Image (tube, rainbow, N blue to C red; front, side, top):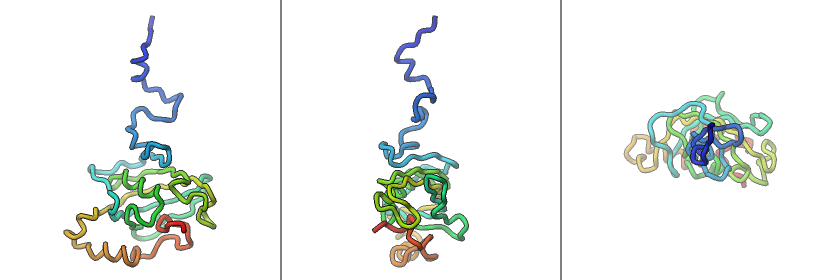
Length: 180
């Protein structure tokens, strides 16, 4: 007869009864460990380095509501959206990008607590909306490297004026703006 011990049960990969993927390390799926930001990798990145708080990240992105309505995207625009990780963007964005490697493209489902919360971001984002973002991390530069690179001027410009191209979706619903 085939009897299975408890020990064996834990090793058996069975995706029928839970949402947690046994073969994903925690930070690859539920990146905060509390369900606030769920990640699905679409295209794997390269290397091992990931942006830290204070890094300047350049991304392509598409943001969608739960029903699939796209409320913001820079896929059609030229260039990238640049922002400083941990500053001026919703919490879920900083969490998301810090889990990514260069060249990676992933989809993130961000709970309201890490997005625009109870206020939402009228008129595009309703209150208590969970948001889905597809984010592609084109490149990033860590804060400590800035002085050693010729792009120190870019760092300054981004801080003082925002991205050179102007913020995407200047109508209010943009990850580049913190809800007031």
